[in-house]
Length: 237
Image 1 (tube, rainbow, N blue to C red):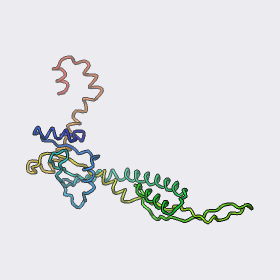
Image 2: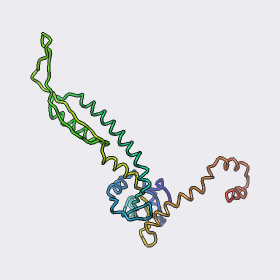
Image 3: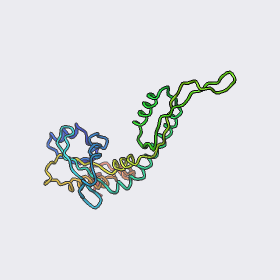
Image 4: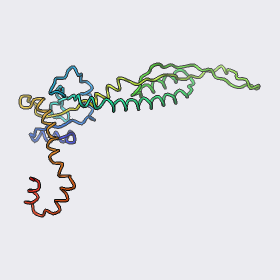
């Protein structure tokens, strides 16, 4: 049983080939994991406890057949709301600045202006259009008497209004509200989804039990221990 640092194609292949059963968290950076979470609807989840809901899928990541438990945490969703909104808002403000810079450019033809608008739109993350348009702008020159005179040519300008994206906010909250636990124990009778989650969450209790090993006071005490027997006695204290 381990956290996501264990989970790589090579590691789980070695464990599976050795006949070792594993329970480990799947890194959220994996494309397959992101896709699995994105494709998960809250309505499809079954309750595992008062605060967790989940669904299962079979994965063959790393050529190892395994069960993925895709878990939704209500507490994580609550924690994610503020940070997700802050990130979306930062993206939105940056995109508004980029739009202002784009609106200062003049294009020689409508096609170029529309291409620039499409390219800008493809990069949007925290914003969506409230309105957008390509404007034709007359070009002027100054005659000998200092009077503005139209040249007969036209330039093209972009104009638009961006608003914060609610879909982006929901996406960011969802990303932080889910995690995936994997196991190569395929028999649900031997290891149910609830037991799988409880086993993974239980490792934190073990880790807390050994935190004292990093405590400065423990290290200071160890300086005075010379025999293996005395070291073991301190560990058991």
